[in-house]
Length: 190
Image (cartoon, rainbow, N blue to C red; front, side, top):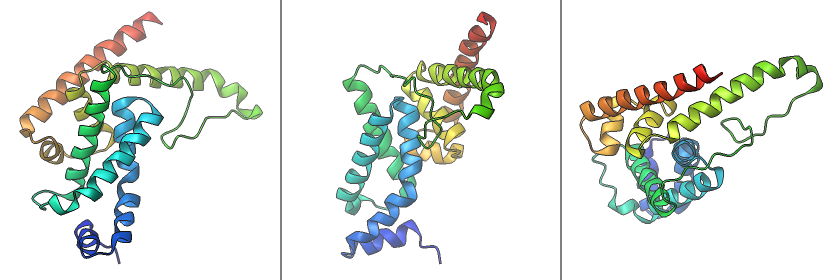
């Protein structure tokens, strides 16, 4: 039996505070992924993730249920990301370490040596995509991250950001165009 977010919230508010850990386990990875793509640094993303769940727990009684819990949680995470970006002047630092989406370091085995040029080219392209994404204004970046990486619908993004769906689509289209232009410059430079 899969318990809903609303049921977990009810249990938490009824005094079963350990139930909140179910929400953390369910939403930690998506919130971390969003934070990492917005901020570009593992350490910042982990901090924002922790801040998000702490704020959600402290303010759980204020959650009215007008939207989905996940929308409310994403909004808290985005606010924490924006706050962190303001503090550091919106500079996104890119780690030079090669990691997968779960933070594991890539290690090449000896038998992978012949695949190294392909892997290096793919890693370089991935780095350029991250660089192009982080060059965007935060309002475009967050829409692209939520749509392309978190796979949220336009309606869900609009709900999270409290903006019309048409604005979400416009930001996505404009942001992707800007990224495409930056990546085209990179491609022609090769």
